[in-house]
Amino acid sequence: MDVLSQLVSATRMGRPRSFVVECHPPWARRYSAVPGAGLHLILEGSVYLVSPGGAITSLAVGDVLLLPAGSDHVLADDPAREVRQLVDDSSGQYDDGVVVIGPDGPRSAGPRSVMLCGVYFFDQGRRHPLLGRLPDVLHLPARLGREGDLGATVSLLAGELAARRPGSDAAVSSLLDLLFIQVLRTWHAEHPDVAWSTALADVFVGKALSTIHDQPDRSWTVADLADLVGLSRAAFAKRFKHLVGQSPVTYLTWWRLTVAGQLLRSTDLLLAQIADRVGYATEYAFAAAFKREYGITPGAYRRNSGL
Image (cartoon, rainbow, N blue to C red; front, side, top):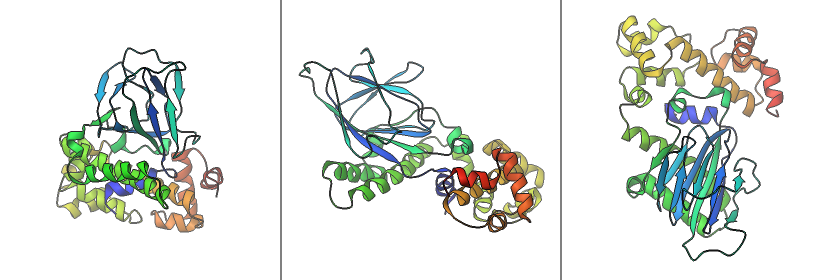
């Protein structure tokens, strides 16, 4: 897999959760912080986002909103509305269902708004630099989504939500995964000057990242990676740290232990087998490195993950 696909799959925790919210004016709801990334897709009407810092963003049909850090925020039909209730989209109580919100008393004659709300869960202790360097709010207006892959995915998702059919649960979950990747891809394409966008596209650092991700079991040194991409050791190390935010060795260790965590969560491989897959000569060396990084032993981590 490519670097972006690998980092998302390695740090994800379970399937995304989603629910449709049908809003009748007047309304204003606060969404609590979630352990991952929050998503809103405007299916009908118009909505205002009030960010934690107070910034106001107007959202229209087809707009996609991603909050990479899962920050708390307010959505409303009017940014001046009083916020009266809390919507928690991480508990699963609304999973793949429809929530209707609005005033306790008579509703106004104003148009309703309909949104798909979702959350992608991530291992908060393994937050990837690519996600960590994103702004708190990524807003992709519909003008960016009406063409190409992103627009097609939005249309497919809206169709599945409008008419639940056999297989819709699996389809919605898969489309949410695809939408997340496409939002990141689109945003990075629109912001090529951001460090990680540059890192992925850079002919030298991008190749080194792909190599580290594909072969974490190799005993890579900075000199090895520099030779591989055709730069001097000093030039490569400086370029890598500037774009990635970590030295090549630090990132290699981070990636190895991130992959190890994924294997502990999702497989029943022996610790010695995992150690070999992520480049540690012995189970003891792997366990010591894992505990330094995670604060607990691999065995404890696996037990806490339910395996």
